[in-house]
Image (cartoon, rainbow, N blue to C red; front, top):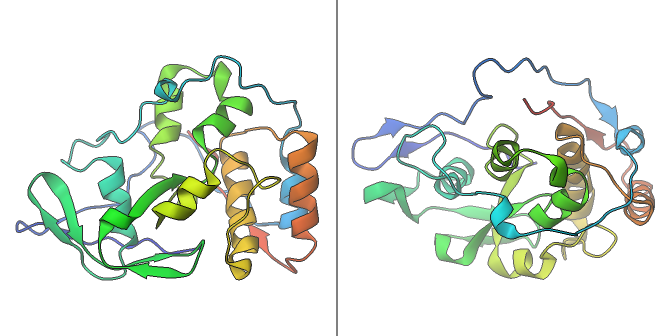
Length: 219
């Protein structure tokens, strides 16, 4: 997993903390699980995309009202050097490692912020029953490193809304980490998996040795 670090904002050099759980949230990290055990804990259910619209998930908001939207927060947190930030929290440059394909970039224009479990997949897996506020929280989840990941635009668009039965990172060495983060996100938000997805996860996990999964339930 890529460790997110906090960096300074623009000329004012205001420190940007990673977003915390909303006030009043009563959550605690679950004990680490083996990847196989974590997959077993994902609820089972058939998937349906009926009624899905991307606009059902309001995203790239500024939940903490610090002037930086979710995309900017992720770019700032995941840059491996202090990024250059212009007016209105526009990230101009930095250094980002796209772990899906092993590419390093110094300009944010080539990056997308990937929802680890895509919005459409989340809808299929249980989010269709959520309130609009909970879908917004999911789409802007800064409370877990795995939820949102800065990756090259081409890999994000290749992935689109596919699950691991349909798409895996092109960099083979990234796949066990990817599966662990996918499973962690599903468990964090109590999203289900259908039989095809579960079979693919189990198959891939068989080659991941002692890979562990850690997650904190979403508020």
